[in-house]
Amino acid sequence: NAGVTQTPKFQVLKTGQSMTLQCAQDMNHEYMSWYRQDPGMGLRLIHYSVGAGITDQGEVPNGYNVSRSTTEDFPLRLLSAAPSQTSVYFCASTKVTGGYEQYFGPGTRLTVT
Amino acid sequence: AQSVTQLDSHVSVSEGTPVLLRCNYSSSYSPSLFWYVQHPNKGLQLLLKYTSAATLVKGINGFEAEFKKSETSFHLTKPSAHMSDAAEYFCVVSDRPSGGSYIPTFGRGTSLIVHP
View (spheres, rainbow over the protein chains, first blue to last red):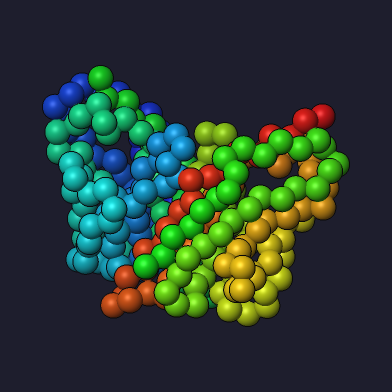
């Protein structure tokens, strides 16, 4: 199993550009989430999904869109990048049975200039 | 509502000495509690979890944590630090899911520094 994969690993955008961060998991988990990690802030939830076709907002959703057409994939779209979106982004899938353990991808480091 | 507070942003220890990383939580229900570790430039990995079974939970790499409901604490300990333990540690709390949603809350992290 590859677990949770994310692409790209690094990205530099100019203000106003758009892009999609890819996330895929091969563990057949229904729950998937996107977080951003900023120094001293821990991880903050952007969007999450409880299954294909179902998404909802987390703590910091503004400026981001998600969709979930399959169980495996959960892309995150930045609509018009801003310097405040410079961060490290983590995708996670959650194993519901046995206590909601989360499995994280390796992260995408995004810089917006 | 749920919240979590990691009481130290940095903890510095010498190799071979005990480690204590402190975490207090607030929860409206009987929570699930987790500790995750993040090594530099890596994703997060589960160390251990508490889900209403035994209050003393053993995890990977010799770490353990004790759930103390009366103190609303879930401190992480290890008897003897190793250089490879140097990393960022996150305490996470989650109330039981409501309406099918699972939304955990992360602490701000504790950076563990291990000196030779």
